[in-house]
Length: 139
Image (cartoon, rainbow, N blue to C red; front, side, top):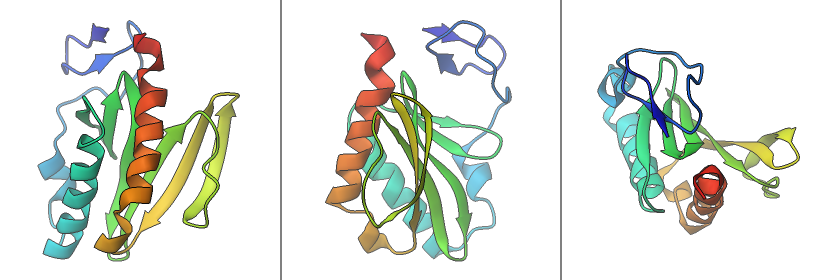
């Protein structure tokens, strides 16, 4: 692991490019409604429950890291939250809005969460797949 000397964020590769700065979850959620913050916090709690996860705030998102960023909240708006989970293979489910295949073992699955009931066991299983993907370089 390499830690950026300027912002303190850990990476699996030395000198990894990133939006270097001091970012926070609180700043990301500033001005959001109680419902929006509640939905974010429920997702955050579920993401943290899958293992040894670091929260990695960046300029435009909140990442969840186990070696690599395996999930992120990309937007919090009046419709809910927009997240992505990176897995080794595409997640085949109606809830997945789209999947970007970046390489043979790197698929970014985009999901819209509009209600707290969508933060469920199925989503946790997907986060577990992402956690396993993120930790591959730690082995």
